[in-house]
Image (cartoon, rainbow, N blue to C red; front, top):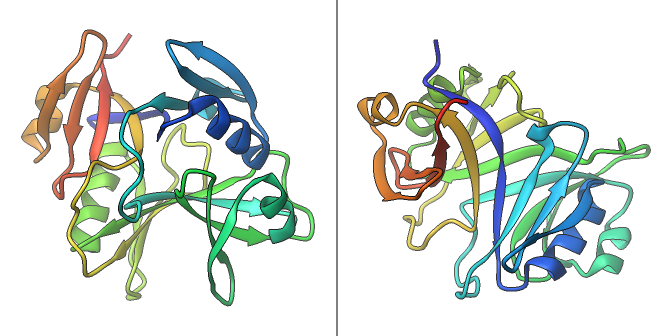
Length: 218
């Protein structure tokens, strides 16, 4: 049995309601004020939830975790406040209104809910990919390419968690992270570290320092 179960997504923001309006439109989710300056996006199930949490610090480095989205057009995203960062043959790298990178995959008929994949940068993509696959009971896929991915993650409202190698080390707190339900001691035994204890959750880091939050089972 896997030590963790996918719960939801979290994004940091200087202005959560402004960023929440953007991501609600991009992902096809409903926006609500979560109180205390935070915002929350909700969809068909609790796993579709995206928390937009207020932080004082602005984005300064490239996000090591990002969202890949289905889109009708790049122009549609530009009209919502995104900017183009880079053009690739199959996707467009864009930035949200606070500079957070995401990748847009243009579809002739995008689905109503538009989160496609979650991407994660790593120094050792295969090590990190195997670790997350074991944590979340996903199917680890390695086809000999530069990147690997974790498919069939129970409860996850996206197709896969894709892990790609990058040359630069992690240098700042990730502004996008996953929340999971699990046992902290068991996750520590598998190589994670505890960063902070909160009343309702524990902030942890994976084997390359990527933050995630662990909530106890109900």
